[in-house]
Length: 303
Image (cartoon, rainbow, N blue to C red; front, top):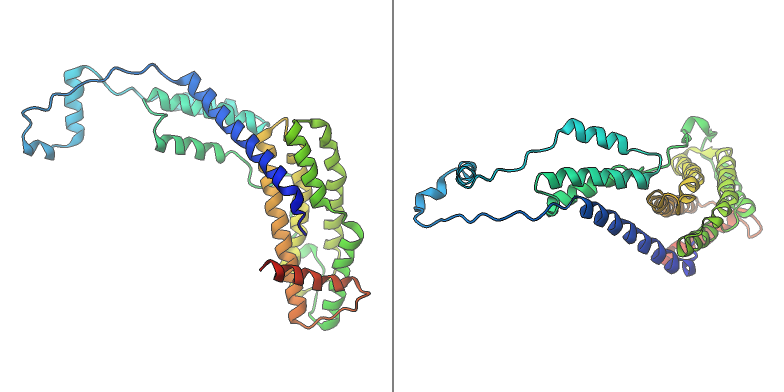
């Protein structure tokens, strides 16, 4: 379920903060390492014959360098660069990327590069590679952790009621509350709102544990397993969201991961609802499973 009225303010805050961080890091690193502009060497090409175009460009460059006395700057010692990069590593992702970017940009500038697009693309790629793609403080569930039962109308019916009852009983607009807290933190750069994440984190953990205990018909096993792991990852992701002020890059990465995980969980809901519908599993209006029809209706309206 989406709460769209919160999204514009959150997206604006996150994007603005991200841009400020990125521009600041690159500007600071370039300011420190930008070498004085080198004098240019004019090469007299008069009298060159047409056949000289076939001469290897490296030979031509060597000849120009020999005549002008200008040589290409030597590459820095890679062992030294690697040592600096290792020393730059820190538990704070923002600090690590800032220091690594400075080291790599310094290395590039010392070789007369740094302002060209290929080098800048490489620096950005190296920086992005240091950002964790998923929370590392979790142990995902496997099929062996679930109770798998044979497919039957009764099993599918019981499953539909059990899963939906968990969300109707334990869920309390975690998505909307999270967006509101993110907006408050990023708008005012106020860490005092961070503790508000903890009750939501515990709620996600509770839901994941309850889902893992539901007997799952074999047909729905892959969807259910991914749904359980989405909720485990969502709970773990709040550690990163709590760093929006102290470690902005880690925090912004967690915001992106949070959105991706909620979208994937939503897709698992749709997959389960479609499977129940295709198997003609019907629920009375008084049963928790009746809500699956609402999920399908919402999905059809979006399409």
